[in-house]
Length: 476
Image (cartoon, rainbow, N blue to C red):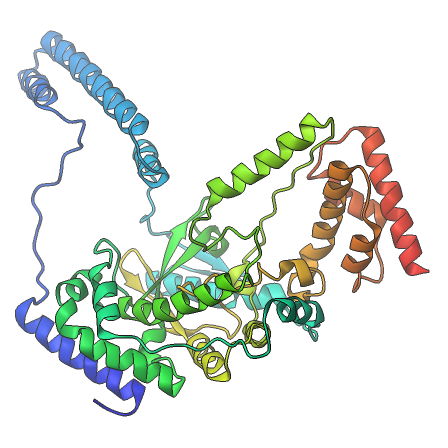
């Protein structure tokens, strides 16, 4: 094996593809039949044959009779099948798959044109290139030139209480057995990345390729470099709704090379275990954590609401959705934060290498765009998703100027919730939250908050009086 990790990975791909092309070459085959729906049965099939037979004979009386019978049989068969399928679904994914079958979307319809920055393109290749440019630049446009120095003092105080000076995170090398186990547990239904190697081939050859992959992963760790070939992402554009000729109506789904996930999962598992054992992840964080989900978060919230309602108090609820939240995570800020969690420099260098110099290629309706470089602050979906801004959101939601446009709204909503739940407004919380906002228009903020709340007039007046009082005292 080569000493340079990039050369070694290229050589590994060359040898693996030689074997695959020899023993399992790609072939194009015409599929003449398709799989019938599970609700389709023999009675419906016979009814369709009679209907078609009488239609060909132009026997309209019998045709209408069998047409109506066919329609009735299909309706009842569908009804019975989906009722049983939905009631017997064991998990939410299976349930939603059945619901989507009832309301299928035509996602692969290629738009006849695409409008972007006052220009309209009609060529299919130009359309996918336009989508790629939009996905690559959307975060930069949202952020603009709004940058500032970060204050990590509160984060530093938090981590210093949890960690001793001698407690540091050290990444262990992976063993052949661990690599083999991960390969054998790959989901063969997942799509392949730009390398064209799907998880099925890797799973079938797990015991053979485990030693070589183990060498590559350990070489990557010891050299503090993530292989360049594994930084390529295949982006699928999913239409969300609205006009198909507007790029913002598409959601990018990044599909990474399967091998890169083995690298990521090894680092993720150890880093997550360290943060979790040292209680460095906030107790309220449910995303990307084992044993946590939307269900557990909702259960906790409902328990809280019921407790306050039982005590005769009022409950106000706010649901927030940050626009392009993952896209707006600044890599420099993320890497700087890791230092306070006692993450070693060599691991930070590896993560920096993983995040930098990434490329993507958009594919839509079997048409590929040109490759483009992802901006430095775009966070690519991976096993490392739990290392993001959410855990320290309680420290710097306002001072983080990347989210400046939503920070004032967030702060006022938090203040309103505090007032509704506890019957008073925490002045220190509001003072701290408004630390970087010099001017605040009460009428404008009232419009923001009332768009989220339906409040009785006397409650709203109390909230606004308290907010005005705190702002005035802060200005003084």
